[in-house]
Image (cartoon, rainbow, N blue to C red; front, side, top):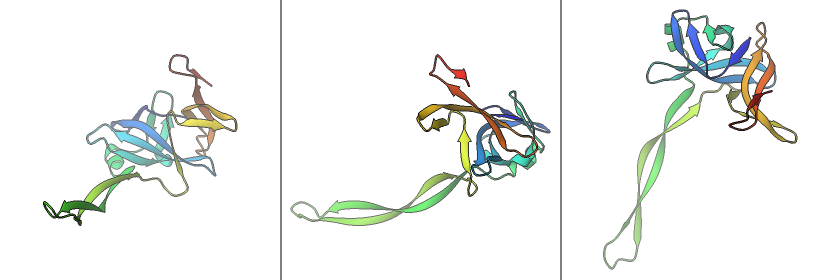
Amino acid sequence: MEITLNTEVECADGIVGRSTYLIINPVSEEVTHLVVRSNQRPHTERLVPSVWIAQSSHDGIVLSCTQDEFEEMEPFIETEFIKVDIPRYTDGGFGWPYVTTSYSQKREPMQHMNIPVHTRELRRNTPIMATDGRVGRVDELLVGPANKHITHIVMRKGHLFGERDV
C-alpha cells in the first residue's frame, strides 16, 4: 500500500478531502492515523484511524466509511481558550511621577494538534536527517497492507529545479 500525502481522499459516497499528515508510532514503525483536510468549509482536518483505509495508491486514498462517519471523526486541530492577564499602564497625570498598573483578563485562542500519546506527525516535505546531516524530504510512504507497518520511505532530494525521487 502506498500512502501519498497531499492527494485526494474518497469515501464510499464521494470525495471528502485531501491527505495532509500521517500519524506514526515511531517505536513500532506503524501508521496509526491519517489526517484528512475536509473539502467543505471550514476545511476541518480530521484524524482517520488507519483501519479505515481500504486502499491507497499514488492517485488517491479510499476510506471504508461514509461522509457522515468522516464528519463524526475527531478533529486534528483543537482550539482552547486560555486566560491571559494583560497589563495596562496608566500615569497619574501631569506632574505625578508614578505609573500605576492594572490588569484585565482576556481569553486568547490557542490551537494545538490532537496527536495521540507516543505518536508523531509526519507530513510531506518533512526533513529527513542522517548522522551526517540532512539527506532529503519525505515525499510518500510505502506501508504493509496487513499490519500498517512502514516498509519504505520515498524521499525527494535536491533543490527546487533539480529534484529527484530516491
